[in-house]
Image 1 (spheres, protein in one colour):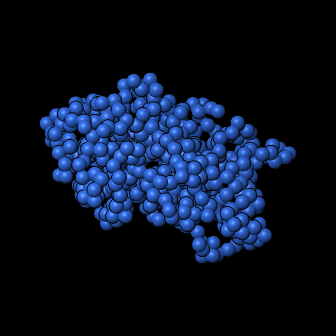
Image 2: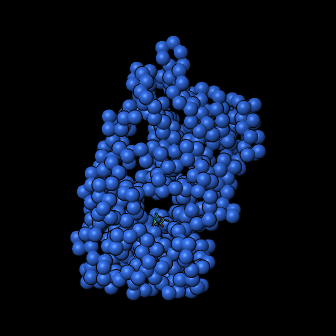
Image 3: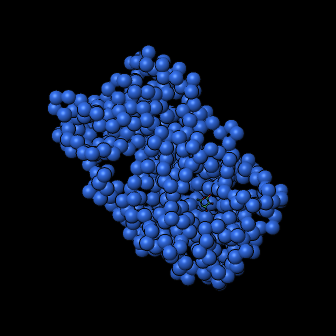
Length: 458
Ligand code: FUL
């Protein structure tokens, strides 16, 4: 906190001076994303596919005693999943290759507990391959979830399990083409056997075999958990944290939710949330699927708060997305497309070109005036920083010109990759933006002003 205050005080004292700092000076010291983290953040909407024996037992956590015989998705069509996601604007899909029950959706050489002993395709099927192929066909990136906690494998609880886990990881990372994200779940039941996971070894293997992939766990190394499964990034959300002392399954959710302005590591938050109450498909939840409008709320609460949406859509027992889920996904996309179709800001080369790399350097408390394309009614604002050089904005506010006066619209805290503001519609031809507090000179990259689709009214 102390350091933060000092930087802030410096900014206030130097005011305009910060605007003329050279790039080299302004970049000094602050954590920045790696190219793989930057690429990941720009995906915005990504999807989770939870599918395993739980789909057939109606459970959320299997206990490892399930027979592979129960896994029989007779109409499995991964193309249907990925096509639905593509049409809804999702850019990446992560499949639960192995959940806590230990059942493998691919024919792993390491175990008999897999699709190869299921009736599906007479034991010749491979769900991981079908999803990877469909992702390639429809232009989505592909990721894998491989649960460290394994309630079936006998080696679990011994050092030999780390070799088992790494061998499975190697299969997934070498046989299915490019992998963009690897998801390390920190969950473990209270009564689980003691097990010291070799996370350093797992992570080294990912870097060796798929250097472009980001790795998720509660605390990174590349992407962190947002601290809840309700779809809520912190109203204040820094992409930086201090990872010292944190480990998968052992991090304070509140800390992860907000991040840390004094954090030394760049580990942005990923908001994982399900379209249904559970992570797996349960017929009893068919009437509880989130509506498109509700998914749009999740978008504002995640992407609009400097996070990334990882929305789970679980295939059903036949191996298909349910119609209700597909309908919500397409409503979601329709509303977002309608809202963000027309940026009402009069063209400003650096602020409306959809490029983070072209930015305007802004000093604290110096207003940035934004002209609109004439008098407009609007109720949404989007602000983006050039995070390639770090995250700076700690707070700010926007005002509109009512013909004789500047009137407040809304105050906000962090911005980072993207901050979305929602407010009752106002009519004006211009607004102004103040950065009231920052961690260093601000690189303001994009500003958008929009009128929301009638499908997502406040
Ligand atoms: C949790 C797991 O225990 C849930 O089953 C689900 O996979 C969720 C995404 O992560 O830790």
